[in-house]
Image (tube, rainbow, N blue to C red; front, side, top):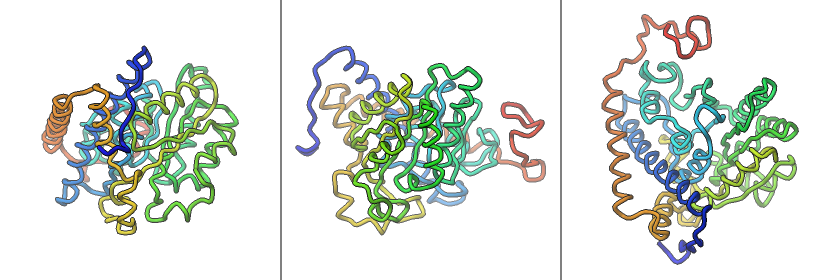
Length: 348
């Protein structure tokens, strides 16, 4: 840890204990996410076991997990993006479901019928990712609005993610505008990872900081160091509290850098080496572990145990899934799960 990474230990009070709980929960989700994605990367590179692309969240786990821990499985609504594995785990997605989807077996939530990142369980409020960036904002906003119309909104909150490039799409504008007008309890995470695939931010927008766009939509704006888990947990707690309290949509912009290419097929050669050594290029997992140690919220033994538990969980999931069947093209009718006789949760 450098002197620039040093943090000040806050005075203890009741809120500090809550912060400690959220921080450690998010940290363990980050560890499990990193372990899982490293395994997925190795399976992809080995060839044959994963069909389709693999998009990893290295460098974005703190920002993603800090949002995910604020959501409740089966009650809140979540529309994650491709680099939100840590947020998915924090929200409640089992590792076994992730592994089953990537390996395309019939026991997975998508029955082996769709791309590995397009997984979800809409009945639980867990929306499948849409590759057309910005579209998920409208989906989550629509789901929140529908609950309001049905009188079932209660203290439900919704959340979705977008990258810096995706904020320039028409779908992002339309979805956020609707959410703002209707004052929906929505939190939008904007991961400003410096590149829209390979296009740098200075070629994407002219404002100094993307959080400035929040004012134009009439929504709450929050800016945070996306490599700092402690800061992310604090900011997202505030954003979700405000959204649930009726303050309308909240936009949280995290400054960070993806620690890899757009996907495992991309070597990120367009990222200057110097930029990789900037503050935004820090490994958020290492920063979070150092924070836990310095705050005395965890010991080296705790960290070692959590990493070991994560490896065991991932290895056990892989061992089980490799024995499970893939779809039989001669028996599968490939109809959408929403069609008659194949409603989600029922057998064909």
